[in-house]
Amino acid sequence: MKSKIQSYAAEDSDIKEVHATCSRRTGSTILLDFHLLVDPEMSVDKVNTIAENFKSHLLQELDEVVDIIIHIEPFNCKERVLNPCCDDCDSDINTLS
Image (tube, rainbow, N blue to C red; front, side, top):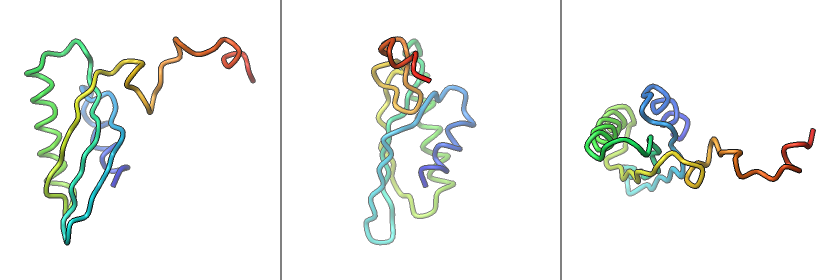
């Protein structure tokens, strides 16, 4: 399911990253939650629209999923997991080959 969520997220250029995906089965249904990272300069209104549209899309596409909690975070070095920034990397690490 994580790969499907990542794939759908990649279709929306406003979604920079999705991580910390958790699913919980309750009987025959699934509850999801994850972190959705967006440009920190976006308005709250735009980010809310992006999250709501993405949630609606996932609810249509993923069988058994009945609810999704989305934690919105800024796409910055502190929050990134899948594509971490290297600005704070030790120079020794960068020189290893």
